[in-house]
Amino acid sequence: MVHEVIAIDDGSRDNSINILIDLQQKHPSLIKILSHEENRGKGAAIKTGLAEVTGDLVLIQDADLEYDPASFKDLISPFKDDNVKVVYGSRNLKKNPKSSLAFYYGGRLLSVVTNLLYGSKITDESICYKVFRTEILRDMNLSREGFDFCPEVTSKTLKKGIIIYEVPIDYHPRSRVEGKKIKWYDGVIAIWTLVKYRFTKQ
Image (cartoon, rainbow, N blue to C red):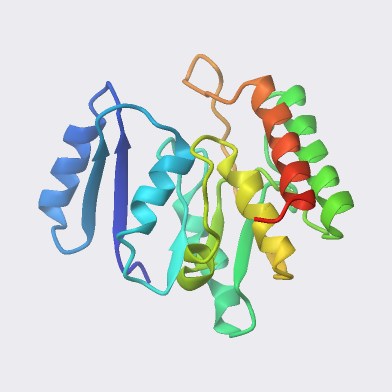
């Protein structure tokens, strides 16, 4: 199922790069490592990886394993239908633990705002698990380099009239102590990004 794994070390200061190198040595034909000298953000990492993609589909996986790779098969399955272009996972289509009530309801608010602005019916806009046909994602002209990659790519997908399909996924949230980086102001930036791309030509 997995054609290639492109791992982007976004200026990590821990042992991440050594772990990646060890994995690459064990699976040299599968894993490609790309690095940023300094931390540039999620969107920047995705754009760096996208430039090297050779497969037909791009599936985004955060390295913290809040999301279970066992969900891959469910995320990929809808693409058996040639009409499916984009699939999102959803933490809200099945029972999952919550990292905090503020984080949970902030995420639900982003989905409501998205649906009001774009006439969509998604339940989890801020989900990590987003899967695209490669040519669709490359045609997005992505510019955001931080966590606002998510609302940017959602906005541009929906403005193109592309339906976002959702599948339920398992979620194992991290705490702040464990390194969760999302802050309250990232939600404000996300809402602004959704509004901006709805009413500007991009």
